[in-house]
Length: 292
Image (cartoon, rainbow, N blue to C red; front, side, top):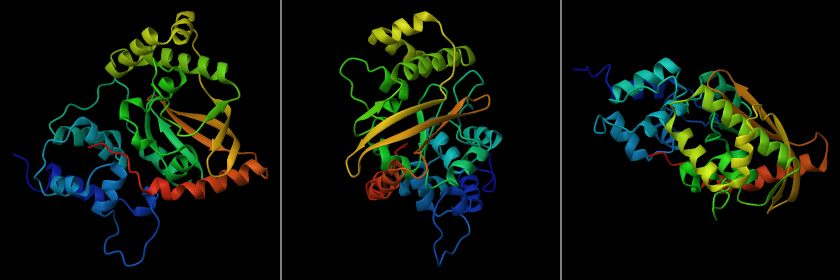
C-alpha cells in the first residue's frame, strides 16, 4: 500500500510545488506565498476544475482518466519517466511505444512558454492539437470551445461531410493550399509507419479515407514528405486581413509539431499581428481548455 509520501495525491502536490510560475509561462505576481504553482494555476494549465485538483491532492480522487493524466503531465512539465510514474500511480498503463504521444517534454515546454508574444501551438504526430498559448487563441480564436477530437489540423484540411473547421474561428486562406494538403497526407503516412498500433490515428485515417475523396486520392498516391512551412491570410475580426508565415518545427521521435505564426519584420502585417494578439487576449482568458 502506498504511503502518504509516495501516493498519487502527495506526488501531484510535490510536482506542483516545484514548478515555478515563470517556467509555466505565467506572469510574476506580488505577494505569492509559494514558489510553485497554485492549485488554481495548475487547474487552468491542465484544463481541469479547481475542485477536481483539490480532490486529487486530498486523495479523494484516485483514478483520473488517461486524458486527465496526460493533461496533468503536460501542465506539470513532467519527463517521460515521471509521466509514466503518474500513470501507474493512477492505476493506468503508461502509453505504449507504438502509440502517438501527446506528452510535451520539459525542453519543448520551456521553449514555447518563453516566447509568450509569439502565437504558438503544439500538435501530435497525427496533427491533433495538444497545446496552444494565449497569443495563438487571440490570433485564430480559442480552440477550447471545440470538442477535443475535432481539434485536428488534418480534419480541418480535409473536412468530412458538413463538418465545420474548428482550428480557426475566422476565415483563413492558405497561399499554398495544395502543397499543405499534400504535406499533411505525407505526415500521416509517416505517422502510420511510426505508430502502427495507434487507435486514434487508425480512426482518423478511416474517417478521412471514407469521408473525403481528395484525401483518399492523395493517400492512394503514397507520398512521404514533411510539412515545414506555409503562408496564410487570416481575416481577423479586429484588425482585418493579416498575411502570416506558418513554420513547423519537429521534435524527435515523438514527432511533435511546433507551429509558430509570425509576420515579416517591420511590415504592416507584423503590426496587425501584434494588435490581433492584444485584442484577443481578453477573449482567450475566458476559455480554458477542458480535459476533465
